[in-house]
Image 1 (tube, rainbow, N blue to C red):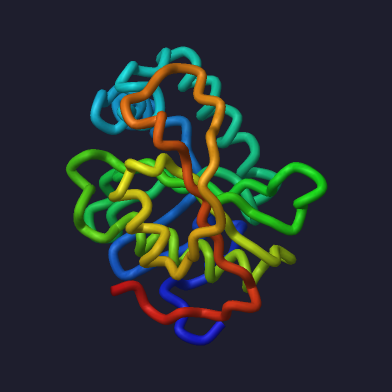
Image 2 (cartoon, rainbow, N blue to C red; image 1 turned 90 degrees about the vertical axis):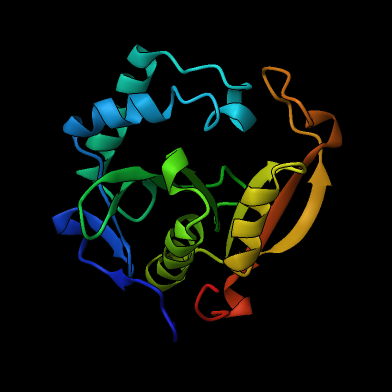
Length: 199
């Protein structure tokens, strides 16, 4: 697509996309300490678990799964994001194929370290992954969800070129402040075209 914000690297080197500031790549086993710390940060987890840390053993099993999946497929999955200049882990992004009947739709997600917030990195990585999805898969739509009150995440979706699809009530396993206001779904369709660089 014209105006791509990332390079669509060959899957066999484990790199999914490269942007101005990020390398999004397959997870490795040695990412575990950084991932455990990310999933234990109460502010990072505020809109997910109401700040409760995820069990390190469960995080390790989750990471093992994505390390193994990356050997088979890099079109969809969950990948580490690292700073391009330093190689420092900053978080992760995912693109998951929706369950039937919406198999032509991918769900975008992201989770970044607190010290990476407010720098435009979530939008930069997301834009590159959306472009890659339309360039390398058969996806007709990429969508994302967040809480109505999670304004920072909603801004990322809007910067990527997504439009508000609906407001709905998700079935959260724990009570999270603000969940009474509901959740939102945003999406961008292949037919929408590339909206240009993230600003």
